Length: 123
Image (cartoon, rainbow, N blue to C red; front, side, top):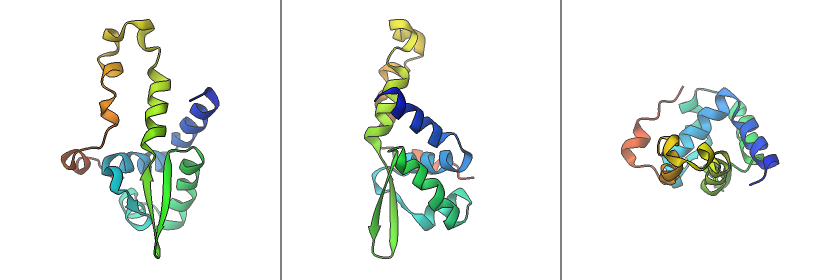
């Protein structure tokens, strides 16, 4: 990932509803959620959701798949991992022990457990 991609991704996340959508998709993992489910859980109108998800898609953080009449959104796990790696690749000047274990625990980007998904609080 280069600086331009990181700036685009961080810019997309720098908004309350987009961050909530992103976090929700992180929590549900590969199954994703339909537009209606996401809008309800985040607490915004479906039309507003569409606007916000398009920004996340442009940044490469979310993908959309049509399933009949529905659109299912999923986290682009690879892009999220690239962003997290970009942000932490020089963590603590080569002294990862100062980073509180973050640089050695990129497994936090893996599929969440069902238990963890239940603890994500929608707005």
